[in-house]
Image 1 (tube, one colour):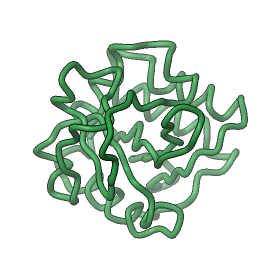
Image 2: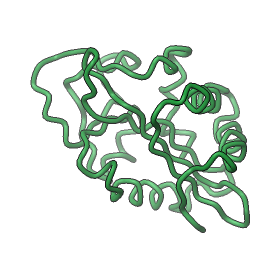
Image 3: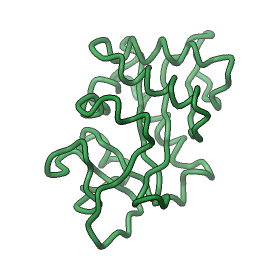
Image 4: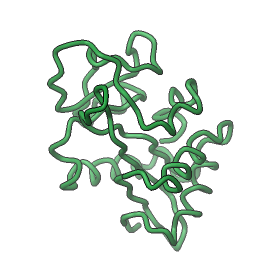
Length: 171
């Protein structure tokens, strides 16, 4: 297994992986494709095994109003046949060590039991617009003390309910 930065040459493999990892939702693949098409800055890595994308992770900008306040981890996906084998955990550990990621406040909407193992903690502020009561919204290196609704890139607004699946079936 080789972890590498996503290139234009392997984007189609990533979109296919996202469709396999989230079979009931086109949101994740469409989201990443729109981010690419619109030239949005995305920190992203892919695990390749025998020329096949088996796992993917992306970080996009998080906003407090118009100011960048950190990064959102979304989406993260592992091919169904490689789930529950530590591939997603290894990819997440790798990403958390990268220069662009390791000093930033991070936010994730996902399964708390999974993300707590990596240092994410339940997040009271800011408030996630996609998660009532922030039940599945976690953060790392978050020093926010006042309440605000965290912002996402506009491409996320195409589906409000879809991000809730992130971190569950996609692992």
